[in-house]
Length: 439
Image (tube, rainbow, N blue to C red; front, side, top):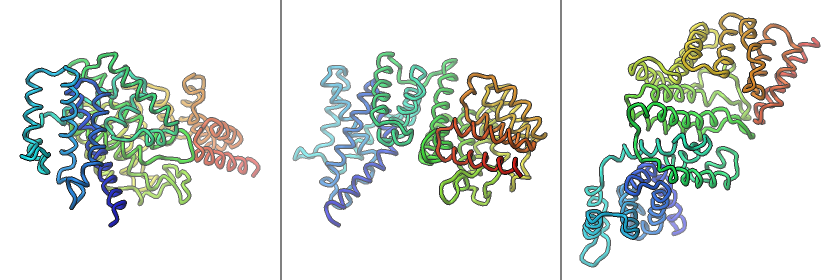
């Protein structure tokens, strides 16, 4: 293997380790420094040191036996140096820094290759708690939704700024500015590095779940661009949800969100055609649904139910489970889905929930029933430019045989969506209705 190829392999390894370990490292440093911005910078410095040092320190393999632990401890050394130079640490911390440095040097004054074992023994505990704290900081309500999503993907997901920009189809400079401003806002607001407790925990947890779901939804149905879905965002959100479920196993809504994302993700392979075109739910080849993800989703839904009454995410997961259990579209229990939407509208009323409830009513009790509810939503300002409102209305009108009206609704929906794939689908449906009108 050439030196360039070996360097490339090491670079890819460091990147993979960083993706897995960055939240733990940044969280640990934030606990030490109480400044998420400085913590992230020092964590990234450790990654750069790994790129420079691993080929020299580990010439046979190119990486240490425990690369994550190596990065963690190098980052902690940098944090201790930062504290010392800023005169912010107490004598005890200074003694710890000296002790750790002494243990990491052999008689020649060089760092020992087996430094990881000693450093791991000196590492502070609570790493999992650090990741949970970091999630609550990154998703703090003091930040906008866009800033929370970008910061969460950066700090907790380990994504680079260009990756986040590509995922949300915005300029890299825009994402960079959001992240910088978010960190500055957190510092100015003196947001504590802690998991809120008591009455503060529920709304803050809701903020964390909202951000994870926002990331997932953008991947599941891309709001703009040439692609119908962005699987990378879905997988990242699902990974974050699984991490949160491990860290907060007593929270039913966490399991509910994980269940929802697992079941929705099971349809990924069936949601697009050979050329990337959208395939709607009732037209999908259900043999392509991922049964492992479905089983995982149903198990998470059971865990949510075991935590008490079902919350909004768990209710949505229960709706998704109705589809997952149906072997073919005709076997779908639409009456149960409509009942679940009734419960969801009582628990968390919103125009979007009502629109989805209209779809369920239309499938369970006939399109006229669904259309009656949709027509009650037409004058709501929040749905005025929401393309799925005319899309749903067009579908219900088409099923009633009102093809000219359906065509107009599909054309209106096509004019509102910013997703190219979805626009093509809606225009195709409008063309079908035009043909039926003249037929």
